[in-house]
Image 1 (cartoon, helix red, strand yellow):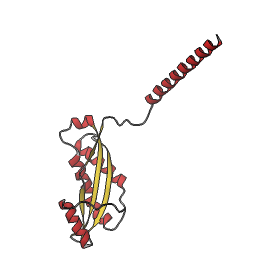
Image 2: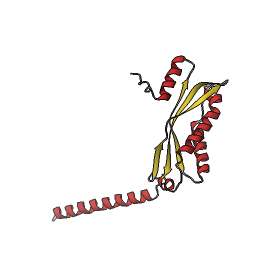
Image 3: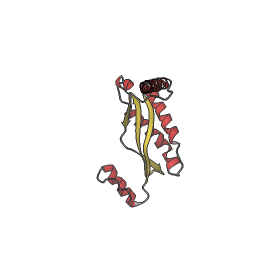
Image 4: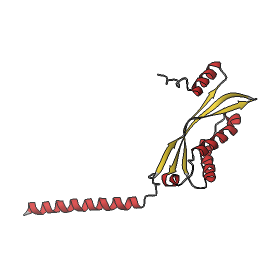
Length: 167
């Protein structure tokens, strides 16, 4: 009889613990303040190069790769994709600051750049289309040496592949 009661007690404790964990898990996810990333679409934009002009000549290029997130439901109702608007806003922002910032090796606040571009794109689109604008890569190609200028021309023409990483 003792063995039966011990077995019954073990079953009750196991069921009670399982119920308590399930109830705690369900109540915890209902009050979760973290944003849900379901329904978001991540889209990569083509690599864009922005010329840096000093004294009437191109002295280098700012090369940037971007990724944006947007609500799939909102994107479905749009007449145009936001890709061209994002590219335009980033190009304008970098081209406007390229001479003053990149030519003199000053830092650009990338968070502010992305936030301002996202806000301007959403204003132009007339809705909260772009949720987040992420900078996947940012580089500066200096054309001061002939080798760098030749390499940049090859890369822009698609004739050469980017250099391999050092080993």
